[in-house]
Length: 155
Image (cartoon, rainbow, N blue to C red; front, side, top):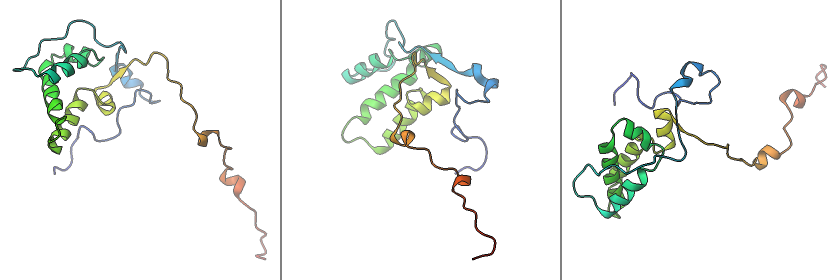
């Protein structure tokens, strides 16, 4: 295991809502929720299976596909599709699953992957979040409020 130096997942993940991030606020790319429109690119690898075709079509309608297209990542996406189809098989090796997760991260298909690429999908309206039972509960007394004064004579 190498020691020292920067690693892709070292330190806190980037947060587009952080209070003191004015210096890099422009670095986040907002992707439209509607996703990529238009024809699906041609399959760049050899002999596509039916399952690979289904996954390929679906992935190219996602918001992240706009960035893949911009950066010419058709082969990377195709390799992800091929490995994902393989990992769906009952006898797939665990290590292949790890590779698929890593590929999904690098393509921005996971929440950590979106943060790592500094991409956000336009939320449109903010989702409504119901407060939890703990949030509705009566607030706890402060430490100062719980403090009791003891008579100084030790009795």
